[in-house]
Image (cartoon, rainbow, N blue to C red; front, side, top):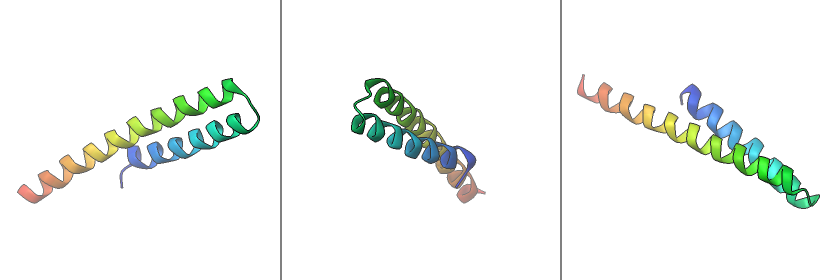
Length: 62
């Protein structure tokens, strides 16, 4: 697991907590911030996954 995967998964989790908390306390702003943070974590995690796949493919060829 590379740094981008770890950071992405961490941001996803923090965003989900904010989203659920915002929903629970009826705070549209906190809920929206959580969705944005979760989405950013998704993107960073996906980027890390892609890097890992490229690295694995390269390692198999050499």
